[in-house]
Image 1 (cartoon, rainbow, N blue to C red):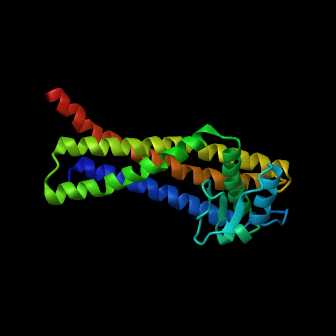
Image 2: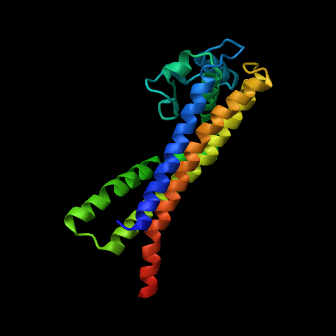
Image 3: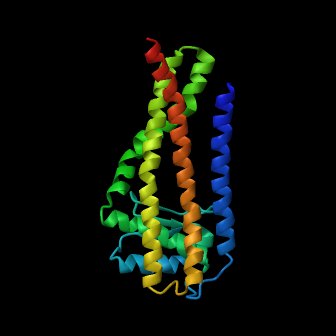
Length: 231
C-alpha cells in the first residue's frame, strides 16, 4: 500500500469518526435537556403527521441508538427508544426530522424519489467496493486498470447517492425546525438552538460520507486517466 493510499484511508476514516463523535456528543447533550412542551417524540411525530394530512404512516419503536429512520416502502416511521419515549430537545428534533421525510414522500419531493430509485444500484456498488479488491488480491484475475474502472464506477454511484442524500437530509431538518416552532412544541430561542445544533450535527455525517466517496472516486479514476494518456 502506497503512502498516498494510507493517507487517503486514514484521512477519510478520521473524518467519519469525527462526524460520528460530534453527532453523538451533541445528541447526548441535548437528550438531557427537556422541552417545555413535555411531549414525547412519538407524540410530536403523531401530531406533525396529522397536521400534514398523513394518516397511513405507522410510528414504531426501533431498537438501537440513533437508529431513527423513515421507511417509505412500508410507510413506517421508526424511532429509537430514547426518541420515541423521550421528552428532550434531541428527541423532538429527531422525531420531527423523520416526519420531514414522510412529508417529502407525500409531496413527491424529487431528491427523495431519486434516492429511493438509486437504493438498489447503490447496494450493488457497495458490494463491489467491498469484495472486488479481495477478488483481485487473492485471484490475480483482474487487471489493474480493469479493477480501477469497476471501482471508479462503483464509487461514482455511491458518490452520486450520497450527493442526492444531502438535499434530502437538509430539507427534512429545515421542515422539522419550522414545524416544531409553528406547532408550539419548541417555544423559545434556546430550545430552537438545541434542536438546530442536534440536527446540524447529524447532517455533517452525510457530508462526511459524500466527501469520503468523492475522494475514493477520484483515487480510482486517476489511474484510468493516466493510463489512457500513456496509450
